[in-house]
Length: 184
Ligand code: FES
Image 1 (cartoon, rainbow, N blue to C red):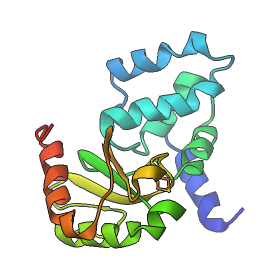
Image 2: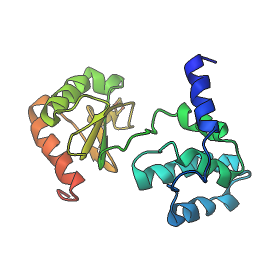
Image 3: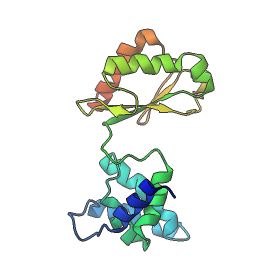
Image 4: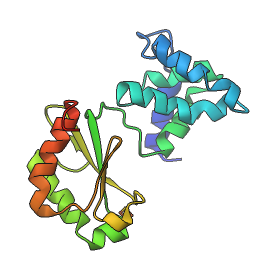
């Protein structure tokens, strides 16, 4: 185990659910508890619980780890293991819209990476980061199952198909409108 990971686990393990303001709200706790009867063990609820936290907060803050561990009867390190396995979860808040531009083979062959670069320029943010106004997080994604419509992008629940560099500015505007709850 690399030293940085050991230090991280020690840091997480030393967290106490009672030393800071709780980040898990009663609503989040209720949603997580609703999963308990549906899974054979509490540990199996870890991943869906992380998704619930992420949906509410647009990230999974460090303080959520010991709180969730306490709910599930696990150690913070066990929760952290699951959390860190998936690149999906971020420790800092994402934008209101999280956009994944596919870079898998079909989309890549049809200009997906160029589209991502164009969107990056239009939004003024590097891939993997969030716009200064907090509206859009732009990321690489893997195959979205939309290969017939390559290059494709998923932005929250919305699908963008047949993207091209020429319309990147228009799509960037649509993403911002989507973040504002507008634009269909
Ligand atoms: S390769 Fe991009 S959606 Fe399948």
